[in-house]
Length: 199
Image (cartoon, rainbow, N blue to C red; front, top):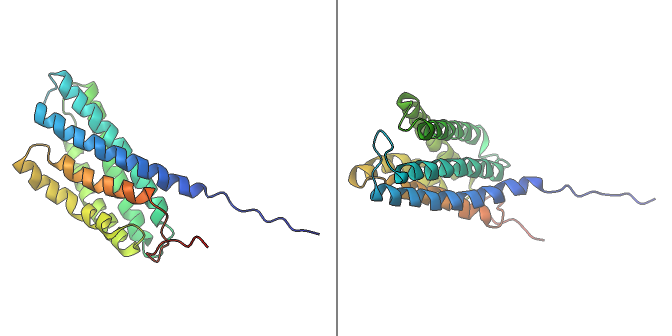
């Protein structure tokens, strides 16, 4: 009598791969938002096609970031070092980006910047969540260390960059999510930090 052994389908691998593609897309869209900002700075009310295009591209970028976050979480979750800190950081970062996405979408529909208090609250949640997720990424050693480091410094650095060049934060965030995207598209790594065995 022969026993059948079934190999589980690695459906969990699809999330990191999709997250990787989304990360690369988010990076390209964020760079585009910076270019559009230089072409026509966004005011409190949208007056031109470029204003609306900027917000639509930004909303698409944030949606792509959400997918990237899910993929990064799926890749790192098996690591014991990722743990509760990684889960908390992911939830907070997802929540922050989710609120910003809703606020920006509402702004497109209502012809201007709206719900500024909600945006500020989301920014604070993002700041904390990104820092926690960055630390968890460094601890897990599943993705390259610079992904975690960039995530920790991106928001404070982006704030100061915007003071120098309007919209420069887009380039910094593009570096963050582009790095995550590229890492997620590479061959999976074990939780120990080394490449997974193909044997």
